[in-house]
Image (tube, rainbow, N blue to C red):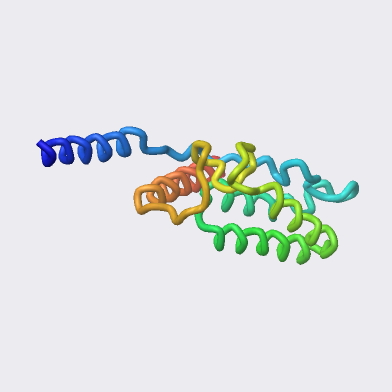
Length: 143
């Protein structure tokens, strides 16, 4: 009887985890979220930096990937000539981008909340790759 119960329990666990598998939402970007996308004279000066950063945040992943993404944002904004703004933005995303809060700009926002740190599974990476392919096709078809 114990073996039968164990088999049933194993089946239920496996079934429930596959039945509730998460699906990533289509990529969206709000630019620099609650931060300006540029200066008063150059409204979108670092918007491209923020959009790339949003792409990394949308898919999520490990703590190390988030840190690398945040550092890339800082480097990108500094490269457009705003190193002080870059430092300020880095501080903001390190504090505000945590995956532990249910915000629309959190790390891994493309997935249902809660979604914390963790390497994407092969199936999840396949979903991300499929969305990237659709995005590229949409851009090409509009050209």
